[in-house]
Image 1 (cartoon, rainbow, N blue to C red):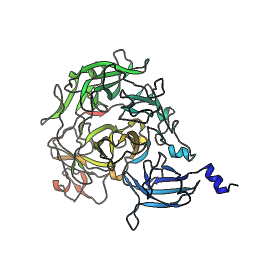
Image 2 (image 1 turned 90 degrees about the vertical axis):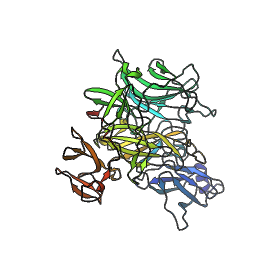
Image 3 (image 1 turned 45 degrees about the vertical axis):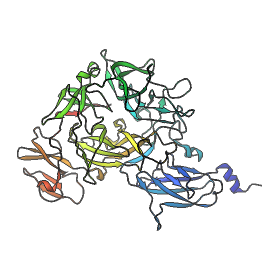
Image 4 (image 1 turned 30 degrees about the vertical axis):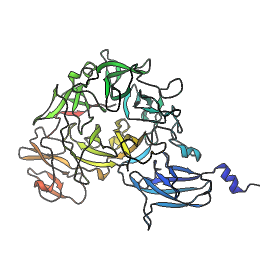
Length: 534
């Protein structure tokens, strides 16, 4: 006759462990629990591990606890972990200290997003918590709001049935929260375009050989006034060798992308790249492109014919006056941004830039391959981008092509969401993280976090100084400081000539008491304002 304990073990053989963020109490994805025999388990998107190991049930088991951007407190021997009595049907919670400023929410793509929650008979917030469109993993995300939905484009895509998937772009849609979609705090219900086998469909099925990658996706009205979804494509022979580039446009009837224009194998002087954002300057709308520099250096008017003509693209340069001009290739200005924590230069490339109504600044996500994501602010799209703050880090693992998704912003832009690709590529990682590798992970960032306070440019116009909104005429930006209404503790007020109060290292307005401006010029794109993203 079976005992009550045996019946419970048959009904629910798992011991459920949830790892939670010490700041929010929310379950943390991607936490490794490792036994003393080096068996590794990883929390799912709810922070759950469903543990069942023959021979260990009913025993005290020690779990080493580790995760990118988090740490567990150490014991007297320096071990970071917990000892738990694991019994079928039992539960335990482990709190872990978050070092990252950004909060890891969940995995967006791939197999087993809520695997352990399902094993433990716990609810999952998304419609396909185990497998969606047979997608095991996929690369870089591009996105746009198109015809009332979020339109997501991903790169090379892996499948369950063979080590090679396809290399012709995958696509999915989702509803925005205000239109019936999930709150991004809970998840994103992706609806993939699929083929006859149920696998994510090849969305750019070009006849010619080569991998097809899409970038710079946006919406524009064509010559008839119809909204179209357009993107830059690269047909690649390898990671670095390109066979062709140009533009594709989405065919709503066939539900694929088709060539709109080909520019051949030769790289145009300037072309769309990365993720574009809109700017209105002097009454004219532009698309600005941020990749692969530390600031936006390429733009084109947001018009159907202009975006198809490489000769219409402009580059931004300062020699020494800053201006936009056609026919000259964009050149990296060659300076590093500065890490506020270390004061040291750091070479970064910008992934996204958008106007933020909460901060009343342009905000950017920048990356330092392989592992780190930084936050920065500037008064204009072109800068000055100088001071940065690390918000996400990974230990020997790559997190690249991160993207702030402004369509998800809440509380007037106070809380924003960032998605990126988690992959072992380029990292030297000793092994791949099961299920998580080569997939998209979503983070959240609160812009009212005092750790995100950054020195702001102090503008000199004649004999007067200003901070915040640039004056109409700017002679120089001699240094950076903090405004009176937003500054870290421990700084001292200083009154500049003309009566402006700012905060710096000492009550003096000499340059050494503030944060020097390392830029030889003032790269401001005057007269610009935020474009409409919705």
